[in-house]
Length: 460
Image (tube, rainbow, N blue to C red; front, side, top):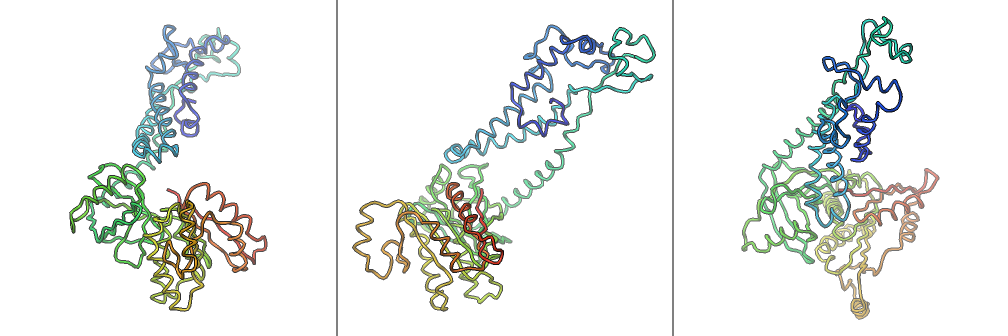
């Protein structure tokens, strides 16, 4: 399994222990039977004769691991892979993103070691001799090797390393992609507007020449004042019809906290810190307008792609866009605290008024759920229960408390759209994704003429 031609499919399963065991087998190769002893004892004539790469009885498997090309590179690529895998754990990605980000660049070391791994030609195969060595006839006539014509001394040689042939193509594409990202980074990004929203949510409205986006897409942002190397993904909340693009950034980690702190300390009217933008990049939400009916589910800041979608819908209605295929949208937003609703309520109020003025109040059905509430919230709501608008959001649609009953919601959507294909889109936690995907399967009718649900989830 040290053959460079075989490393790609098996390297994921390799460990330092299995690497060491391979050298142990080679070390003990001459101790099994007469044939293996004879093969291991072949002399090195012009670096072509021997089969067993272990040529000394004074060495040890451990020493060989750290003194041979295959051994050293095997250790390096195994350690690199272990670091990459362990840093991918969710607890690391959430709390120590820098560790996750930097260790993943060990893939450069990994592929470099993978290419060099076969250079030692530790795996050897038999070569053609003249006259031909008849292995079937000669394997039981070890003493006659080199003495009779049918059994010349067998010759072995290491195979030419070929791993580079498999990785050079992807590596060239990667280098080209990095050059493109560097060019994008060097392009000037200007601030159109900076707003600090409630609940430590920062809204950045940015302008960049030649920038084109679609609904639900995301960009990578880099702020050199914080880190030259860190790039973080953020879903855009603006619509393609607008002459700028915007992102909403919630304070959830070191990088976002530092960015918000820098912005808060800016003098009135000052330009924001230099920002590099790479993208946009596509997501599942781009397909929302391919469905006649769409269910949009956002949890917390996961509402951002749907902000872009809802804004785009508003512009399409405003311009009477004939290409709008979607005829019904169900929007669900789940938040832990009331302040999280505030920055998005203005958009919903605008859509609410727009739909009513056009006589299409039934086009958008939205439900807001406050999942983290206490007795003081309940008392406050009870006092204002008769108000025309919701006490939390100011919308006509009242806020729900607790979590949605998804069976009830899916049943209602299926009942109201008996012959439609419904696209269900989620930007939220994996637990909720599991629930919704199961509900899509459960409420999809076996009759192809009736309601079908297709689940789509944002992944970063």
